[in-house]
Each structure stands twice: as structure tokens, then as C-alpha cells.
Image (cartoon, rainbow, N blue to C red; front, side, top):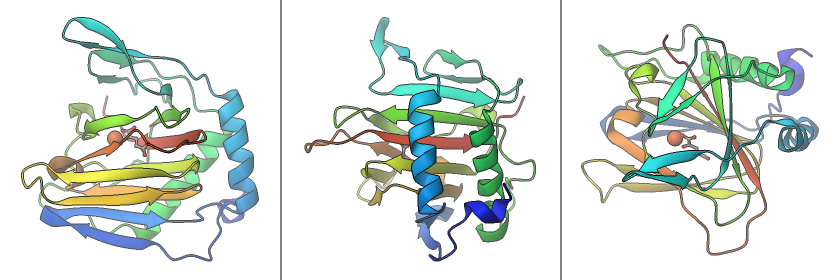
Length: 221
Ligand SMILES: O=C(O)CCC(=O)C(=O)O
Ligand SMILES: [Fe+2]
């Protein structure tokens, strides 16, 4: 399939400039409706979803969602004491990765100088999250692990249930932003977003169907 077949080019991306040089680019209807629905079903059924644990205060705690991790062999990822060993990219994720890289080349603003971090080599890993229902969540964090480098470009693609994605400035905590990330929405976080802002998917008070989120990253060896 060519990259062109994947796109639904009807909607224009929205750009949101954040305080202190963060940047969000949001593209709704990123894939054609049929492709997005097929992908949602395939990923839900076929990915190697697993329950991971993190250590908190010396205790092993279940993280409130299922995860899967794919990447090139040297793209190891560690957070909260948990090291994820990548499985090779399945075909459909490799195809999606290419489409997202193409979108980034076309649509992202130039990286901030002097601490620039452009997406020259593309992404080499993807962290997949499955939020089974309204009880699943990811708490406040930044994607700022050392292996991601300074000012990384993080591409987040959502399928399934719409969930609220919140951002908060780290220093100026009154600066908050909420985006409803719906099915087939691509969100790119770039510039200084990870340096100055944190983000979360809170638990919901209303019932939620499953949601899949894929965050494509470039991990330095
Ligand atoms: O599910 C989302 O939209 C965000 C996931 C996330 O922040 C992460 O995997 O680092
Ligand atoms: Fe994140």
C-alpha cells in the first residue's frame, strides 16, 4: 500500500503553540475511516498486550492499562524501573510509522534552536497503550527520559474511544490545556513540550469503551 492510500486528506492539521516553545500539531481523520477501523480491530486483537508493573515505594504496582512495545533491536526503553525489550514492528505498525513520518516531514515547524531535535532518522520504536475502560489511565508525566534526547518529537495516534488528554506547565501550574483525543486522531508533540509540560490521561467518571494509543518515539542507543 502506498502512503497516499493511508491518508484522508480532507481535514487540515491544527497547530497549538504552548508557552515556552512547546508545540502541538493535531490531525483528525488521519487515516481513511475504513483503514482506521480495520487497524483498531487488528491492533486490539493481535498486539501482545501485557500487564506491566512498576515499583513504587518498594512495592510492585500494576499499571492501570495494558502495554506493548515494538521497535528496532537497539531501542530499549526504561521508565520507573521497568525496562521494555522491543519486539520487531508488525507490518501494519511499520506502515503507520511511515505515514506518520511523512506527515511530520510535511507539517512540523522547524525544531527550536540551538537545542534542536529534528526527526531526521524517523521513529525506531512505538509504545502501545490499551485503556480497557474508564478505570484505565496514565498519570502526570513527561516523555523526557534521557534516551529520547532533548526536545524529542513524539507522535501519538489514537484509535477507539475518545479520552481527555491534559497538559500542564511544570512551573506555572495554572497553565492547563485539555484535548479530546478521538478515534483516528494524530497528535504530534514537538519543540520544548516535554521539557516544560507534563501530560496525562485521567480516569473517567463516565463509562468508556477501549482506547488504543500508540506513541512513536526515537530512542538513542
Ligand atoms: O494515551 C495517550 O494519549 C498518552 C500516552 C502517553 O502519554 C505515553 O504513552 O507516554
Ligand atoms: Fe506520555
